[in-house]
Image (cartoon, rainbow, N blue to C red; front, side):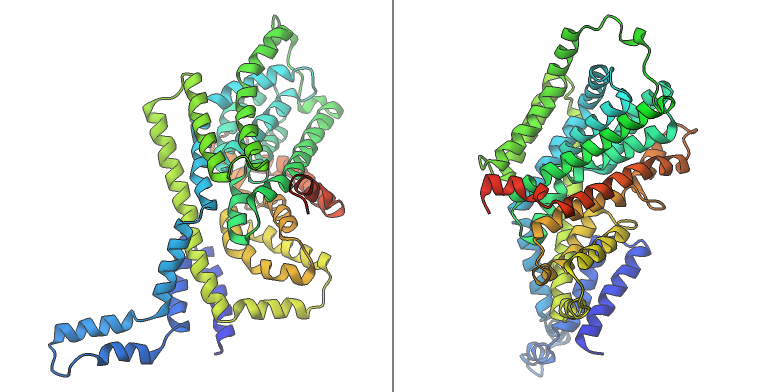
Length: 472
């Protein structure tokens, strides 16, 4: 068996193991080290370590010599160096800080106040509660970037309120599932930081490029919600006037000033500092974490227990991302050394396909991978396989990354493995069935495809802001 064939066996075996449910990060590390030992094996090095021993040494010393000879393999040096490079990566320093900001905001009940205020402010709009839920999801998802946390929390806050207001169960479920995924696209997105670390693209340019596509998708969601509520009022009945009786315009403005604007200002200050070069992503994330603590203190919602939970969850999620990077770097280094990337590259280039066909093929593969895998695993493990092919097809990696970020919205909304639907079903009232949630997700899935098509037809949606701020 040739080395490239071993590399393809390595990739196929990895996919098989993760489908069986093995932990992905540790599977990557184990397979990287296992196949790497074969790839870098040099019998002469091992025997040189053993032969340095005198012939009459005792068995303990001879056993130590055998062990030293066994570990005299470059894969162990590679693994240590990859671990160090991940842990010292300045781009990834922003991950725990942004996560901490989001978890503090989540546990300080700021989202509850925000949803209630936006519901009052949007009361004159058809489907006002769904619009308020989408805007709340967008802000909260932007702050935390963790889809499961956003869908779960909004499912606990907004879904009962919408069902009480006699909203259609599928319609209400679709709003929360779709809104909960927005954080992996809209800056300051954790996913974009991870993509930047994997691809070498500037984080600030990615943030600038993703801003307008993110607003485009939110706009499409809101247009769909308002349009459906206008055409079919029974899906989203208007709230009785008595519910908001006595609430003046001035009181509404005051409520927005104390709930919506503080969180929005924090997010936009963090994002603005990054986009305009006033701070690095890590520095801006540190300011965001401090600002999240400040908001929690201002709302008198910061307790020692909540602070401890926020720190623990931030560390746990960060550890998952870092070990995924360590495993992925080790795996991909061995895969490339064996010739795996080269054989895939030659195969794709030999197909003689157009850039559009390549993009469609790549996005289809990522779409299918989104069923069994989380976005972090797709970005860290599989996207780097496509990156070396981008120059051949003349595709900008920034544009490709934003298309991937849009595409990954679908992985959370597409049955049978729509994780957003399962997150919501886990905390939804018993009468809300999984098939109803799936049906509610379908129209929003269509909005994602429209956004992807629009971005491909008008690529300046992604390139205009980076070009304006940073030049071409």
